[in-house]
Amino acid sequence: MENEKTRPVSEIKLGAIVASIWKNEGISGSYFNVTLSRLYKEGEAWKRSESLGRDDLLLAAKVLDLSHSRIYELLNE
Image 1: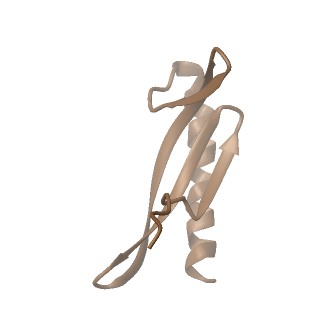
Image 2: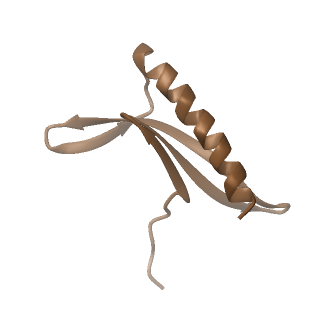
């Protein structure tokens, strides 16, 4: 059996802010978690940071709002 990298079921991206939506299985069924990160470029490589600056906060709030709506869509699929 090959080891496959776990991937999010959905991502919401606005500018450099990304919310990754992860599906998990529990005793009561499926549930979702979200990780929030900021993209930045170091040399030629793109990297992610969990640290947000002041100017990232309103965009992060919008991304989280859209993630909330996307999770409800996923629950109804």
